[in-house]
Length: 228
Length: 78
Image (cartoon, rainbow over all chains, first blue to last red; front, top):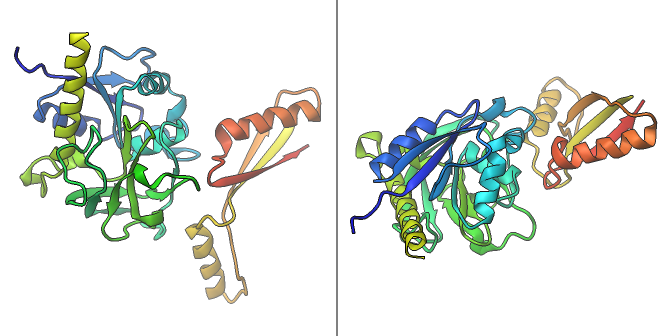
């Protein structure tokens, strides 16, 4: 049978700004990209969800703290708890941390400056559905653009949950952590923006590796669901 | 009932805003070794007595107003 296009949702909260780029990147990675509005209480039929970057609810109180109470966030938590694949990028990472799907918190950059530039990352894990096209120990270049990206892990963070690290400190994150996964490995969040690096014209196409991995993981799950 | 919540960065958590404030105060000639910057949240709580109000505000802090991993909070009533 023909390889089906997995259906991957991208959530739009008030203040999301990278939702369009994430939809574009998914479509370019051979997925059916599905916009999901923040008021949805029930997710459409999806094989994975991307929570994109931006400034949901104006970053009021703490980044991601208000989005956590959006109707769609409850549906995403349910989806993730059932084993669904969820990728949080930048503000999406902050939201997933606030929602308790990922460990840790993101605070103001140590420099107090907004950082907006390409950064080099070490991929620590290539055995997640988000990094299967990468090589553990290998480096990728994708941009960051955030003012609140300093990752603070819980004291008991299992080091194997670190998926990406900055090669050079860019925001004061503890142990240069740029992205983490949950214990089960079906939820990943990172501050850098793979959706802004999916074509050489954008300066780097390394972000496409993450989307290709996600699409492959979502397709595998969709096919497994079909055969049961 | 009026309640005030003070939210602070926990001890040991880097507070670059506080460091910037301490540095700026130093430039003004003040002798300050440490500054930590937190938040103040003033609330009007619908509660009949202080004990009920405190319990309610504690729940608010746990669920939204503070992130227990990085922040501590203090509640003042009245």
